[in-house]
Image 1 (spheres, rainbow, N blue to C red):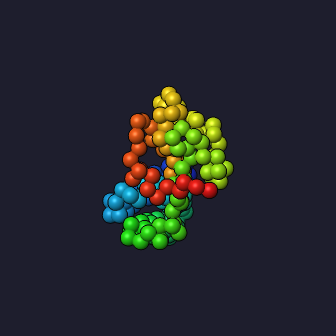
Image 2: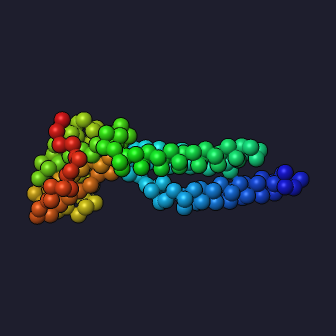
Image 3: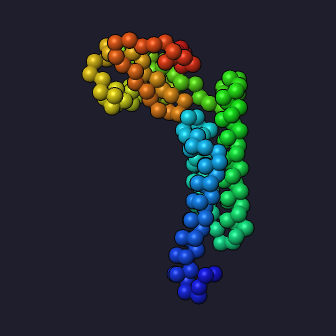
Length: 172
């Protein structure tokens, strides 16, 4: 306890633990790099959510051992995420285990119905993304891709370089 006044003790403890937890996460990210909080894969996304949960646990801890355990877990998760991302970059077979495959939802203005069904993506979701991308004519749409992160990319214009569809699943 910092003080005998319960309300003040809660405020001081919460503030101190928030500063300690946040500082630790910043230090870890500085060591590991900004990729730590990317959302390139579902694994990265889950890691980010887990770190947020651990940080919340750190701030709510009632003992210093609870704080230390949360900070160690943050370090371990970021270390695992770092190792996984390095392995993904070096081994294509490992990427298939960890990441999702981007999927073609629309090609040359035509919806890929089988892909929509398989990915449980509605036409209205795709149409909303087309509006966000300022598409005025479906004939301008070269490709719509459901990315491995869950984002939807809209590629439109006069032509499309095939390298932009490299690694994208095109069939059922």
